[in-house]
Image (cartoon, rainbow, N blue to C red; front, side):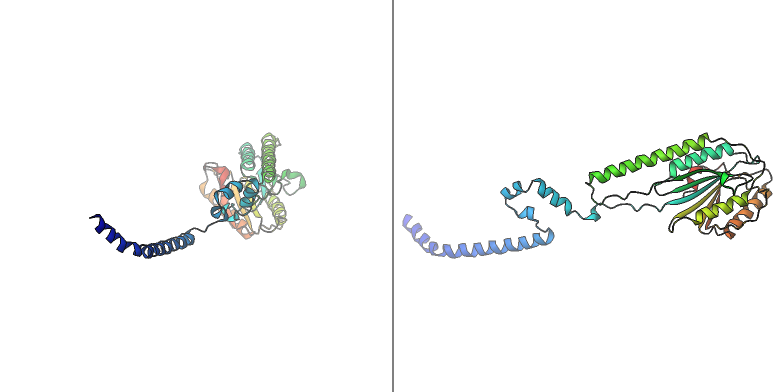
Length: 286
């Protein structure tokens, strides 16, 4: 029996090298295909192709700097900031306007919530001499915006941005406090047309691409009857604290008349806001 087994093994043994070659060839072909498929799906980086010893050495600071430098900018998308605004803000202080204190409080809230880097805010009185230089109350010129660094690990850029944000917050708060504390005497007359003429001249000086906004807190009851040239081309007009009266038809006619005039002067958008509307402070910047 033992002899018989030996004979059979002797027959098989010469075939072993051939079988080993066939098996090795099959394994080599399978591994090559697998590697090609894997490389097509996931490119092998240098760090992945290194030996274990190389990987340990590549954990130094130079490797980290190289990795940071090769991060594409698209991986850190940045929001496009809105263009700056030039805002002329007029507050009626005539005796016929019953919301003077509310208008100043509202103006303080507007500038504190909405002033942004690059903006210019010009606050003016609407009185009997609305066109005069003395009608100016406050001019806030916000510093230009600081662009974000494309490198998210730029510590100096972050510090500059933080300092600029703090300065912007300080300016907003100071302007708001000034408007809240501002005191003035009521005017006996209301020069709406003089105010509009001056506002148009101020907004015409805005750089190209700037959003131009005119906010008028007034009852729009003019009793000076000037006739200056008025240019509101490209300006968005918002009439705040617009006073309604028991005479509904008269109020509607007044509103329609002024809306027609604003558009004739070139305004791109006209909106009236009365005291009963919610979220008043946000409507002018919708």
